[in-house]
Length: 201
Image (cartoon, rainbow, N blue to C red; front, side):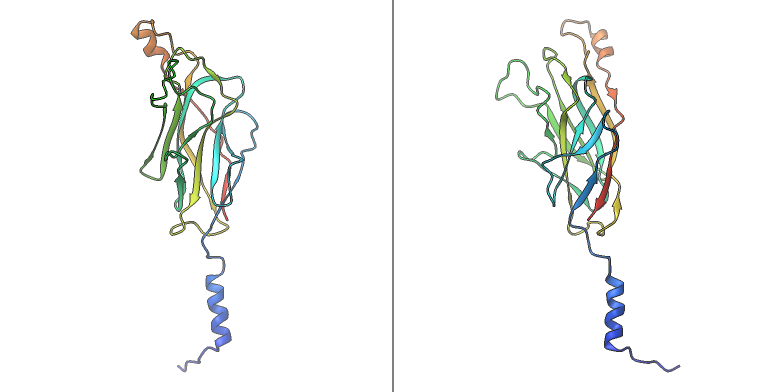
């Protein structure tokens, strides 16, 4: 069988066709969930072209004392840190210190990465003497960035999932309550968090 050399123009066209649409994404676009109430992740105004910041917002009128979640990012997307080095930022709703308000007292805020590209993060009130807070505002923020070396292809839809979320309820007992009462009231409230649509750009 005879072989025929490809012309330079045809070879270039074939190569261009193979690489078309295969560039890696450089940013993330997020569309808020349609629900305007309830527990939900919404785009925070502090987001930029290269850094997507999502805010966890609760239903107005629901009083809580803290909230935490496990959120899984898709492959090629990583969780970014805020000032202070943590991968979570509090929204200014909860009092994260005791009523003694000692500046040296550690804040009740934590975040850590788990296997499977899962971020476990939370903000909490650790003093029963503090009043519960209205959850209808930004309670915490997490940030996402494209990993330039392993990021998804531009234009592809990627999935963001909340694996578990829970809140500390309003009634957690008083400091003088017997232990069996405190144990019963310290049960976390499981949350169903609505997540919007994430797209790699």
